[in-house]
Amino acid sequence: MSRRVEQVFVGKITAPHGLKGWVRVLPLTDFGDRFVKGVSFLVGSPGKSFVERVVEDVAWRGNFLLLRFRGVLSRTEAEMLRGLFLAVPREDVPPLPPGHFYHFELVGLTVFERGVLRGTVDSVVPMSVYDYLVVKDAAGREFYLPFVSAFVVKVDLDKELLEVECPEGFWE
Image 1: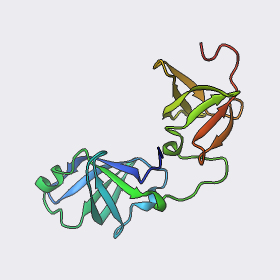
Image 2 (image 1 turned 90 degrees about the vertical axis):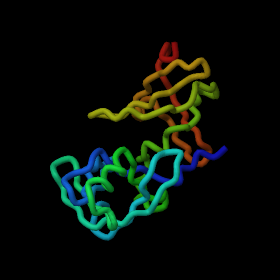
Image 3 (image 1 turned 135 degrees about the vertical axis):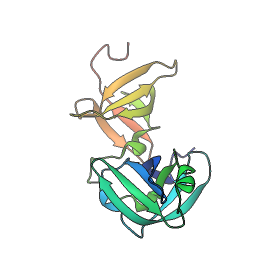
Image 4 (image 1 turned 45 degrees about the vertical axis):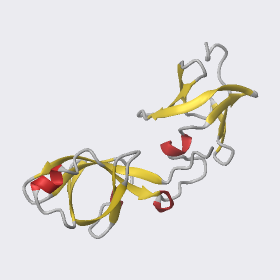
């Protein structure tokens, strides 16, 4: 079964703003320059349908932004968007330099150590210095694996696997 992601979330609508259809958006991307007038996003919820919406206006307010979508003209219409995500097609995500990965690319990878199955990457926890991969084993136990070269030997997205070398006792 392929774990290929078709849509990548780049923002979440947290609340309406004002009376004229604006919404407050929490960006979920490091590429803030993608939020511009005229761009379209897929708006919806995971596991449900998405609708394409075009950005009519944008205003940054610190770490969040205000957006107004074409055709959303009132607070009532904006309220209906609360909690929905903004997504872009996977092919619209800019490539990263070699050795760098998006979190969505790592989730679901099978983790092996010297040929022994250790589990699956369940999620990624971003931290200030480096990220942690949450590896869940067959028993449901979680292990927080630092995503650094001292532990991660190889990432193979095509084969959907992650090879690691961990200190003795790490998996206990």
